[in-house]
Length: 386
Figure (spheres, rainbow, N blue to C red):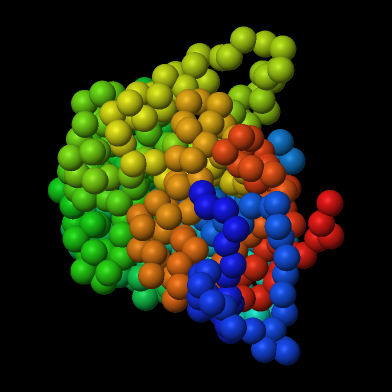
């Protein structure tokens, strides 16, 4: 953090930082003395085509909401996210809405709608029999929230097809609740995971793995995925492996917190349920082990625009405020392969900037006090100073 910076924006990029900045009569000057300037925040795990499960269950969203409705909702969610200061977002699965996420991305790029820069996964990849909606008689066919693929030939075709349809990243479910009594168990074998990664990497794309079990995480790490999403049951050995293979953890703290509250947990008055206690313990262990952390809350489980909920929980669970800010900007940019575009305040990068009232080192919730949001040099939000 520095004091008294001057930034010159020209077109869509940062041209100069400090020094003898020359202006012209046409230069627009914005004075935010005593405020905090940050790079635009980067959301690492979101589902723009979903909305909170306490409004409509996941099953009903997939089965009863039209793709048109979901796309319209996605456009609304994208704008709320951008206005909250998140200028880039990684959307990890359309959850039954086909490639509507690709359409949202293209609509934003064309200026049809306002939203953050998107990195999209299209349809997540799942093993036969492992994904939902579930619970129907075997003679009833229902649309799934992801795309089935198994074995060498099928996986090869599906991964390449998703790339061809516009996926920026490939998401695979390394495990799912399909074990005895609904227990989470691994899905794809190590060989299958390696194949997915090999095919995706050959096209310049990374693979991310939903994984909550120790064995699924081990397979995903050894296969070469970029990030582990959730990672609930990680052990010290798994964290050591993640550090050795430079695999990043996206902990999605806020999603589990929201789900437990939907199930009746009174957070302000009741003791933490076992799931929350376990998550706090595993996240602290990841920090102690030196695992690289990317910021992503699984937004869509809870409300879009409330993205800072994840940053707040990261500090509550033991991460330093500055490290949370790094995870939300430069680390996410590095891990997602977009550091040549965004993630830092640096000459030559795109002018994705936010101004907030207050110091986030003192209170991370100050990230909610948005005064300015700029994306690629365009002012999206500009509020009166206090």
